[in-house]
Length: 152
Length: 152
DNA sequence: TATTGTGTGTCAGGATGCTGACATGAGTCA
DNA sequence: TGACTCATGTCAGCATCCTGACACACAATA
Image (cartoon, rainbow over all chains, first blue to last red):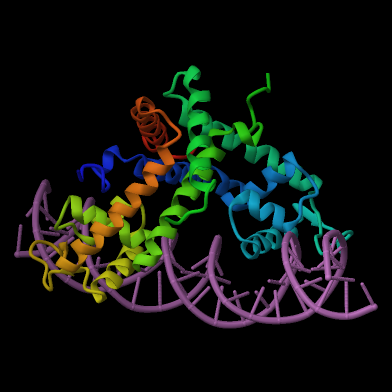
């Protein structure tokens, strides 16, 4: 009756392992990005803008899983260092699109290479044939949680 | 030559998806734990103590992937609410083992059931046969990153 | 015995992210 | 036109977690 009603052995909990793996990845990324003068959050913004320029503060916040307020702070730091540029006046609503400066592109290049090496090391124990499967499983898990809201 | 030297499409980045899945899980856990008056960190401590009682502050910090200082704060909150109890004097070194109170056991019961439902929902799109494989892959990724330190 | 090293608990200060709140600009509709 | 709704940017305050530092307890060793 009450076999599956609570969290079992932690070593067999996918949630617990998911947290461990994500924490390890964040720590490894931080270790390679710090020497380049970037935080993980700052790198995330550069990567997002590298793939899709002219995104607003709110767009970037959604892409990096943080609030607009937090992203505002990150953007301010990047702007002061000259890695990104924001339009002074909004063209449409209140949104002021952001884009990479040449210095931002350069910083992204080195950072992206370093992060790619981290990701490669993370996946190194898995046979390449399993990479796509892991990706699909993570997508499925994410969608299962975000699809219908959180409660219940 | 330079095909794999930087992060590619974000939708195909295991690291990006890992972060998304972990963030979604954390948010879902928070949504079900808040109504019970617990934070995710507090729940983690209760769960750890439920599986292995008499752990010290430092033990719990390692188990929850936070610093001793942060865990100290969490324990203080749980102690004030009467969910855990710590020995007043250390028996061996400076370590003061912590254990669940009856109220702590009760709180853990409800919280663990709620979290188990979240985890079940997260895994619901995957055939049960794939669960063990996902778990093993996450373990492998974690170990690949934590085995030899971070840098390089 | 005295020294060194390791593990632990705790205080102080700072960095980061969040919730709450408000004002602004644009679209929708009576 | 005017009221309403929605998305955005930003300010303020708070919560959480971190790094740095220090004192204490024990074990190992010369």
